[in-house]
Image (cartoon, rainbow, N blue to C red):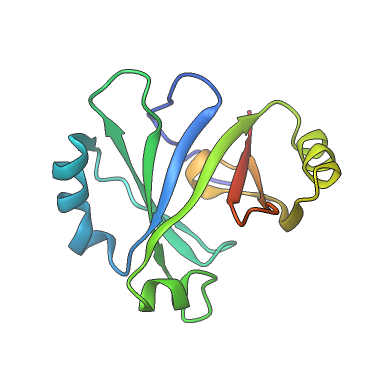
Length: 143
């Protein structure tokens, strides 16, 4: 895996909020302006997930990052959502032990939507996805 990694890291376990867009290039400046956030112009292509992502950093200390997620292939898991206009997609938390976080989530009735896999934007650190009973999609990012 490449040594590419996200340069900004928020404080605490709440890492980012994911928002699906049809085009990062067409929407990033509007998001940066509205959120009063900075953009480092890094766009990561993740073939494992079929998406391209970029991150915005709030100018307010302690805020989580904002992730813009764009479908990279026709069969991307976010393609149909983007085609309908996109929108708020998920929240992400950093966890110490990914396997234990999944065990705990299952015990609370959540479904594991995606088993652990390496993520390009995080330098190969693993992520996993759960879907809660109240219809919240949560991404876990291994510390």
